[in-house]
Image (cartoon, rainbow, N blue to C red; front, side, top):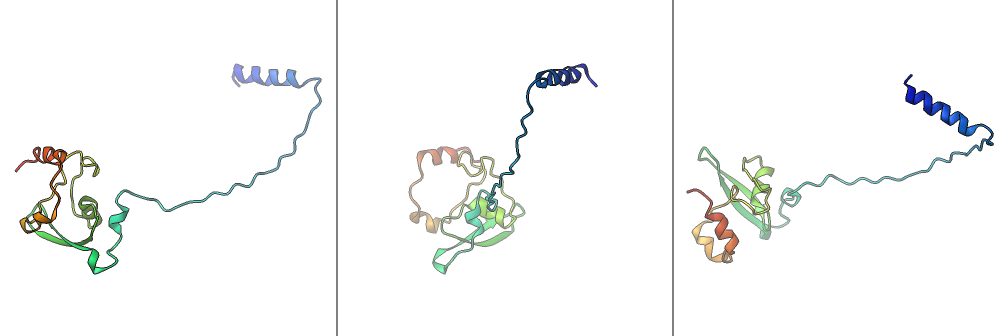
Length: 130
């Protein structure tokens, strides 16, 4: 037994000599715990479209040149949607729009339907290699 432990035991005995011992009754407290499902980034992308009006068709071109067509929905994050369908896509900034590793190319026929890019977006795309 260490000397510190012996000293602590001796001190405890000395402090309790001459004092009446008070027994406290122990009443166990009942605590309630609740749990929720684990939420992960991109949960919205794991929900299927509720109607055909929400469907967005996305074609991923894989590294080997093959195309993989996915049915997403309006508002889906393209990177998280790729992860849902086990398509390898790097997202160095975890979809915070701070890098260009998960950039997309939009068919020119749909370009007029998109808003003009922000200056930050243009700056980010300047870092993308051809």
